[in-house]
Image (cartoon, rainbow, N blue to C red; front, side):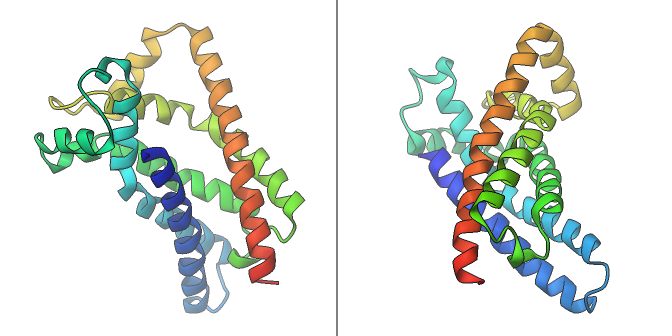
Length: 208
């Protein structure tokens, strides 16, 4: 349940707020500084997306086999986390916010030629989705390393992203990281390819 809820809501927030903010910023600047407006709108949409951190948090806990015997489902996990306070739902938020903001800037820089005019053809949406998705998957592999390591635990000390990355990087062999990076890139290609295709398909009919 968390991946489905998180992904659908995240994409809605990302595209919705990006287009809304870009239109507002372009209007305020009277069409000037469009590239800067794109970057600001994209990074802001990414920060807004990061409020969904609890969904990713619960997903990581449920996927960790160490928790299979004590965490039954999404609701039960949310109730267990409540014992540790609200901030426990947002463990790993820094990595998610950075990944979303920077990832959005890269994605919309490649594909966002003016907000709602993005990818007017389905093949174009698929191509740019696969291309940018692969780049993002490889580029942000370290962010996912830190996020997953951070979110595996309940309670206790909150470790910083940099120290967590150094620990995880040194714990595994380079070949393991290489395979992880490859799989993350492949997942990005599939995921963003579908997102780009769907967005182009819907957008070509709404904004034609």
